[in-house]
Length: 289
Image (tube, rainbow, N blue to C red; front, side, top):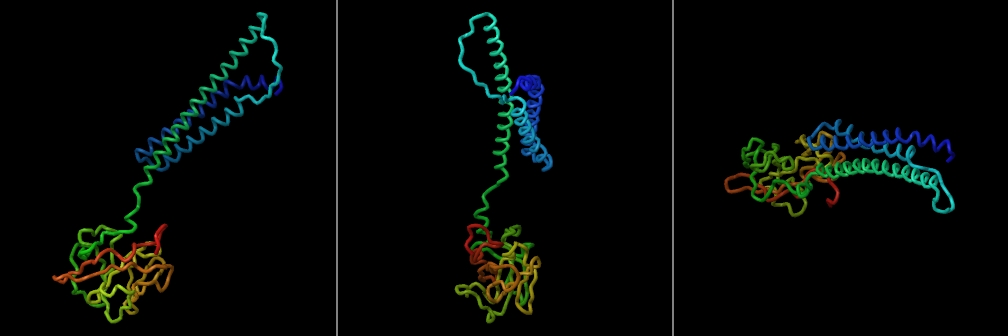
């Protein structure tokens, strides 16, 4: 670097220092604002703007520091004798003090930059709060359990008085707000059922129950084609054959609707033998269908 460039950089030093410090202070303000908005459940726009200010201030401060304040000359010189005259000693002191000031301002900028990084690290740790609880075992289990009585949405117990061809949405007693437990109950002709092996005792008097949540995208399976014994999902037109255990026969669904095993108690009420045959709703990682 020539002498003119060094003098120009030296004159720009105070202004560049002020700009870099201002940028880091803006980054500090942005990081602190994000922390406040996040923990007070502020609007997403406020969180986004404050986080953008934090990163922009940090980036601008580093760029100004690197381009306007860091020396880029290469100096080579042989080691000479120690200063002996008063003039040489004075020049040495002035040179040393000048470099001491540069080190001091670097320390100030370093503290500001470190403060921004510290707050951003705190913001990042805070984001762990948004991960919530582990979804398991909710993904595998519902509110259905052995002996749970089937009830309608208004809590009315279901008996075996339903007619063939009727359809009803039922829940486990006391759990009518359980979304994953919503179930379709139908009464079919027992002679027509062709269920998978091991399910012969799951359909007392022709009553058969399946999860109402489509195995494709989780929409409610809400349509029943009585003439062909097919359940339909209105979202993407997946079709399920009731007589064969709700296996998919059309549409994008690739997995049968989970079946709920039933039995009739001594009072004529329908109860569950246990939970569904598989997890309700779409497939997910680590689940082996």
